[in-house]
Every structure is written in C-alpha cells, then in structure tokens.
Length: 100
Image (cartoon, rainbow, N blue to C red):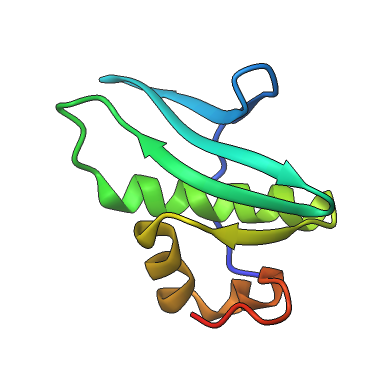
C-alpha cells in the first residue's frame, strides 16, 4: 500500500459518495455497492479545481478505506481505471476478471 496524504473524508451513505472539502468547494467520488464490491462511478470537482495530484491522493485514501472494509473496487470511470494503471500497488483491490 502506498502512503497517501491524510485527509478528512466523509462517507455520505445517503448520497452514496465520499466527500472532502477544499478551498474551492466540495469534491466527491460517487459510488454504488453490490455484494462486497464498490463501484466508483464519478468524480465531482468545483469548476475552478485543477489539482490532479490532490485527486490522486483522494483516490489513495479511498483505496485505503476499501482495504479496511475488505471491499473489491470496480473502476467504472476511465479516470479511476487510469489511477489503477499508474498505481500498481492497489491492483489487488480489483475483483477477479477485471483487467486494467
């Protein structure tokens, strides 16, 4: 597991999204659950937000949450699939049969 910059992430189960706040506003990663899998479907950022490294750290923190909850991660969004390609250490979170 790679070290991620620690940040406060709220799991808003009602809206089905992980949330964190930055100076520009709210950043969220939408998800859905099916069995022991979490499907990451969308990343929402404020219009003026362009810090891709922060998004990368947010995703690392979400992967750590998946490890803690013993979930497999299904990246629906191409940007999240790209995260898995660039961060091989998290590939064990992918369910069997998912090739990135």
